[in-house]
Length: 91
Image (cartoon, rainbow, N blue to C red; front, side, top):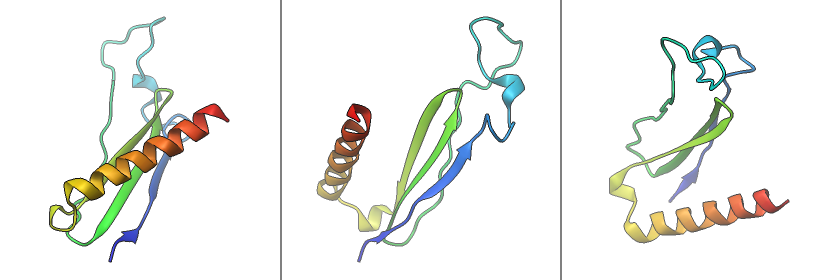
């Protein structure tokens, strides 16, 4: 049985985390954090999307156990997520 779960780390800017290192075209910095990655180790039949906002971009990381996922189910998740983004973008 698939179990839905969602985790949101939040908006790094509003939490004032790494703001001094966000890339900026107007003022290049000696050290910049250009991207971040968040994930978890999943060994159960979970499909866990983790989302966060950093440097003006909304990011998603999808985690699941290979044992419980096949190509067909992952294609379905991808299709449904793209449809959701398309609906949200056109609103």
